[in-house]
Image (cartoon, rainbow, N blue to C red; front, top):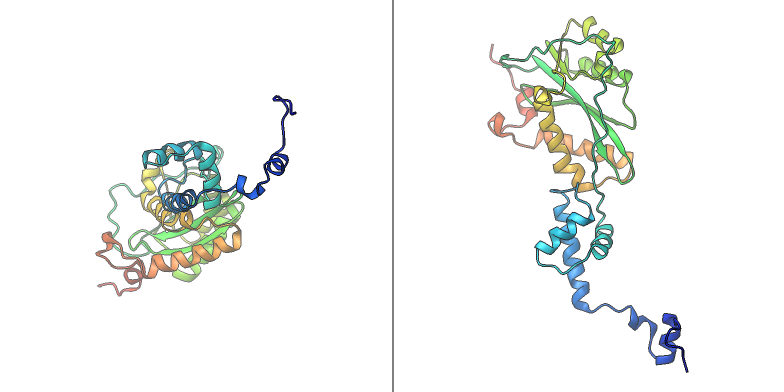
Length: 271
């Protein structure tokens, strides 16, 4: 006889009952089909709420009518490739010793290309860690003039980006940034001063001052990055390159009367 308190392994129980061990782990077909349906829902929902963890997604799925617990949801989220996006690393670090410049865009009517350029740095979530993306845009046409990804951000990187953009597109009248130490650094300010470009900086804590590039970040993340869940720097670079080509040359903008940024930037201006 067996002691009722004795713990018997699953393998031993199967032998005693003369049943196949695989039967113990069998999931009815209906559950398998439901799991696949849930995974499809998770992949679609990721574009909308990539910041949800398994607890919130459990509640969300329960509200959709699924009888799921947190353990099952966590397993299915892993299968779907879900990588929860947490609070972004801070990209604007102010150096109090650097000179700050006034914001020059208040009330300014931007009527032509190369009148005002703007730049910013944002973080890009990866399967493991994150990288940084920098871009320079022309505010009148919304054209992304230059961009690059890196695993670090420094003043030299930003200054080099600016020099490359000036060499390719000429120079703007005004260049707008935030008050980050990269942009207030001597090496970056010198590029602007050497080219007689007016320096404009957002007010401290006023992301609205650089609203156009903030909208760009939202577009690139929600229309590309969050949908792709890039796993390494090479795939990220190639994916962002494809997206910005689409953004400049194919994506219609309502604010541009449904023209593309490239059409706007390269059209002949009326004298």
